[in-house]
Length: 405
Image 1: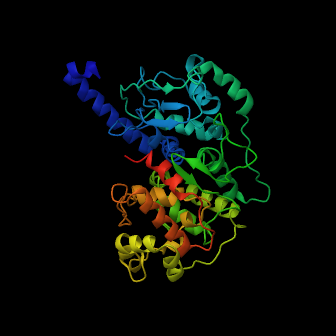
Image 2: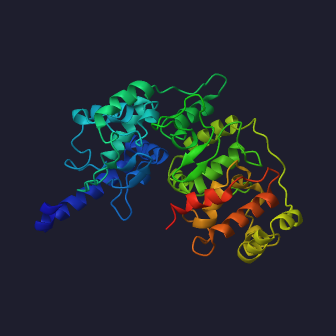
Image 3: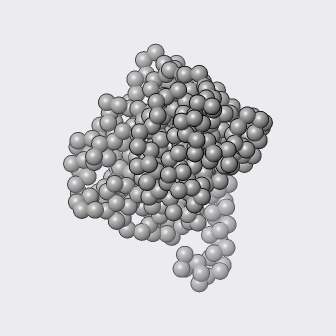
């Protein structure tokens, strides 16, 4: 980049070259396939910092062990992967080891990518080579000892890097492909599977729900708390748009996931939806309820807060319901076994999926006190769910506040 600033003619050549590469990628079937797989893998979202160049790294990930910054995966030779070979890339994707033996922390989900086919990895490599170079170096990680010693990852890998493909017996071709993508490139278990104290997924409880980035990622199997069944059609629409006619909108990290899946091939997202809907087919689905009077008797302050801040959009005859958005009674968060997601939505609000007309919900972090968030959450649970009252909501509110500034 410094050489370009001193040589305008060279800058023009390089910009023209980047445009030519992009055009080539669009016409190259392998690169085009890789572009779709990159969307399924969420690569751009993780490897792009706020206001940074696409894929140039630098996004911060807060973990229990410290802060880890994503790396530059553009075609830059000095800061990205422009100097790598395809074998280097495959090793990083499947073993978490870069050129020269540098080990990567498993916030990079290589334990999942190891399940991807070599054909898919080769397609991703072909596409990433078309990404214009960005001379951006990621900030150094800030990890607590001893987690800042990369050589210790060899022991972690010996214990936990044993990728296991999902059971595919009885699945048709589409569901098998969906299973491969969900377990592999889609790395859904990175959020929806519980982790142990050293960050490894609990292989005995895949997709049974877990905390992720301050939110609760609910179960994606028979324990799904969704009050309405997730059909393959519902899931495909939700995964591609962040919205569903029979479920609530994507919130928190899932919003970013659906934004990237909107760029993925429809057939691949459909296969993922077919597989997931099969996993959740045995879930129990209590009929939606609206127990407004009973909830007001037990939580009068919550009812007042709802009337003032929520009813204009969410009550019978309200704006959201008139444009076809579902009632709060069918939203998964109010039926989960913890109040985390409801609290986070109240505090942070919701943003419309890209290019969609709503829903937008303002954040109330600066409007409501902890006590008010607690009362409103308790009221919503009592009104729109038959599940027992959440315990110690206020502690969950305080925990959520730590991530709200």
